[in-house]
Length: 293
Image (cartoon, rainbow, N blue to C red; front, side):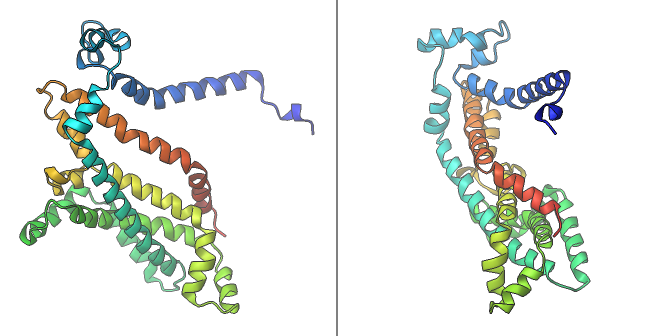
């Protein structure tokens, strides 16, 4: 069959490209508009008298002699030390992902290879635990943390985030392991591998895209979390999202809104880079989890 026979009709191609353009504008425009506004002063970006000031930067020009300024970033990172919040965020995310994947891969593999009927009920209980509102779980932890004097520290927040994230990680990795034929385990054992060696050298390399996909979702949960980190961490150990909320909570102070805008851009940019870098692994991982071997 010729290539021309597979071509879409011209109206369909036009409609498809229009849809992609509209979707891209709706998804990407808020970020690029915020990025643009982060280099303006508050009177320009939030101008009520003339919205075109956000484009021209008239007040920014009169204040700094240029239509663009990095005052928002300097105020956030230097004056308010937002770089500390960034480091705290990546420490929390790294620990949450590492612990969640370690427990999730071992637990998911064990449950996927178990023949006992209680496996189903364990997964259901884990799902029910994950479905509970985060504020309910955090409120149950707080009295213990206050009694033990461990409230406000990063390890405490990491512990709670792992507990909240673990059921989801277990479910997702269990589905990935279920998609891998058990014949691979048996073949590895025939070749002299132990159960753990079969898991490490045969199964994990096969489902590596699934591990990356699950790790990314775990990272996003910890990275974007507000409830846990806002309630558990003290002011000196805040992560990025609670600190952005703190900037917005003091809007009566001149410049703090632009500090928040600059912080939002700084917090969002790594997510774009991360997703773009791992996009192939994410797609292949989700596909592998949806197809059972």
